[in-house]
Length: 182
Image (cartoon, rainbow, N blue to C red; front, side, top):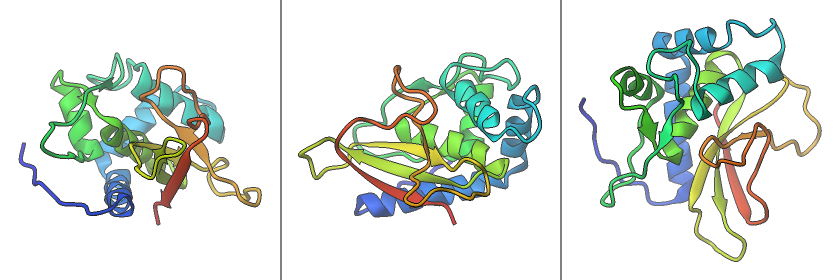
C-alpha cells in the first residue's frame, strides 16, 4: 500500500486533514457498505442507535464487517511521523488481519462511517488542562443527524481509544478544538 508523508504545521491543519479524509471516506462505496452492514439490525431512523452500533463496531467489534470482529486495536504511529490513514485503507487493513490504528486513524474510521450514513461529523483535538499542546484526537457527531441542535451544541464525542469512554464522552477538563466536516 502506498502512502505519502505530509507535514502539518498546526493542530488546526491536522484537524483539517483528518476532516478531509473523513469526507473522502464518507462517499467511498466500501465505507458506506461497511456502515450499512454494521447498522443492519438497528431500527430505521434511530440516529443514536446507529451511532452506538458504529461506535461499538470500531471500539469492540462487529461480526458484520470482515476483519472488524474485535474492533480496531490501538497502536501508536511510528516515532518519525504522524500517519493519517483513510477509512477505506483501515477497513482493508482490518480485512487483511491488521486491524489497528492510533487515535487519528480511529477518528477517521468512525467519522467516515457516521458521515456515510448522513451524520454531521467533525474531528476534535484535546489538550490537558494547563497545556497548550493538543495531544489527542477523536471524532464527534451531531445527533439528530440533521438538527435542530441546541445553542452551543458541541456534538457527541466518539472516542474509541479510551477504555472508559462511551458515545457522548469527552475527556474531563482541558481544552478542545473542533473542526466540523463541511
